Length: 132
Image 1: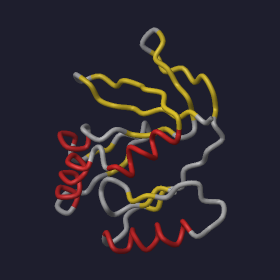
Image 2: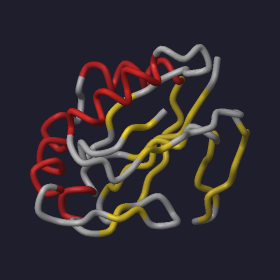
Image 3: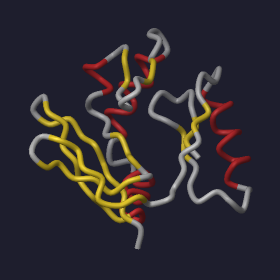
């Protein structure tokens, strides 16, 4: 099975957790972080959120820090305060950002899900992006 890495903020430090891809899909489908995502979506209407090179989000850290990030491309671990890549998964994430509305994001997600190459497609935490 394919393993991916979840990056969470815990006590002002980033922690890594390796999960099966199917477990990450279950977390997304069941809305485990729905309350935190609703707060981000409420803030994103009034604040411009920007993705940094390390994957974190700039703009509303108090809210975005509560939503974990998923690294589909690698299985990683922390070793001596450094991230070490244990394995490359080969999964490529395509992001469609800066959409005008949640409805536009849903339409793009639906279109992407019809393509045979798509493994997974979901609306991002801001409600104005799609991850494919």
